[in-house]
Length: 422
Ligand code: IMP
Image 1: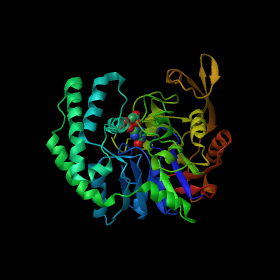
Image 2: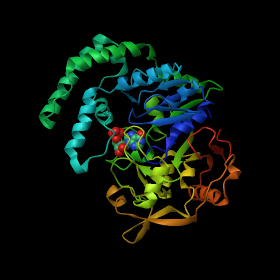
Image 3: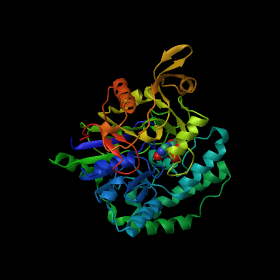
Image 4: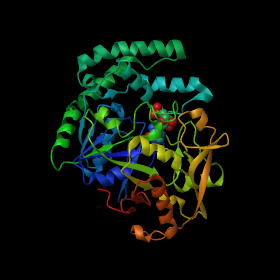
């Protein structure tokens, strides 16, 4: 199948970066299709660790990488990432769709102002200006990448936008926005620097998918339960991480895709919102410390809990996983017993995933208890203890989706292939 999409099956941070990096070897193009620098991927190659917020993970493999129209780009962050890679001797082969929107400092300021004003009711955003930038896109007031790289056009469009935001920040939030002239000057420079990367990604990907033998990898950010429409609204991000959104976000007609869902062997979430299998106390602390569960983007400690198959079933329904990659199995090593949620109880009745988050926040998970395992040397899937293999088989049986990849550590070689993913 020439189009492969990597989707987060949970609340983000599932380890998509590592899986994309692994599969990028087989790809001709790696394309980011939504979100912005709220994402954070860590890719470990040998002794080197690469952290990206915007650039697709395929850059490490020196693949052709693309940022599609559905992404919101903070050019300050992008230039920083490009500079860091240049210093390490990597010149990314990057192209950005002119229709992608640009994050401005006023978007960050508004994101922060809203969160501060919401107090206890805050969403726990990453503060990267993602929501306000997507709002401007939807209200047709935003700045697109094609504007950024054309100084006269940029000035013409950005001044009214900055003025409107200054009013909003001042009158509603009693805050002074960043200085207009400074923003214009900084962004004109950034536009000059990035002008050479502009190109019609929609057209290019379309023609790659029509060409025999070309493989395109679509890299998702965040995760299914953070989807603007189908996630735990309003505790969601402002874009659509779902597999189907590839078509609209890149600008392609629907066609069959190989859909690789990525899930941790347990569950984590950063930010606010319901989380049925959340744990506190020793088990959560152990998962957080062993799994280094602190946000790549904000450093916030992640909330931790058992694997939730009710949620993964829902994620499968929305994305149509053809296979699953299970990450961080090593983090569960050493527990005597492990729990997996298979249904929820609400008002004395067993239910599946409810669409109403008021209900979701009151459900009690119903658990299946499985024997724990201790991982030793793991050079191949067959080296896994029987109990670990049963843990995986249980997931496969319940979801009716094959697990093809099992990750037992951050390095490329700490990956076990249960069957061939592609
Ligand atoms: P925003 O995307 O910064 O607006 O944040 C909205 C919600 O999505 C918050 O709960 C964030 O913590 C969460 N979020 C955004 N990006 C990521 C990610 O890459 N991983 C995990 N959570 C994320």
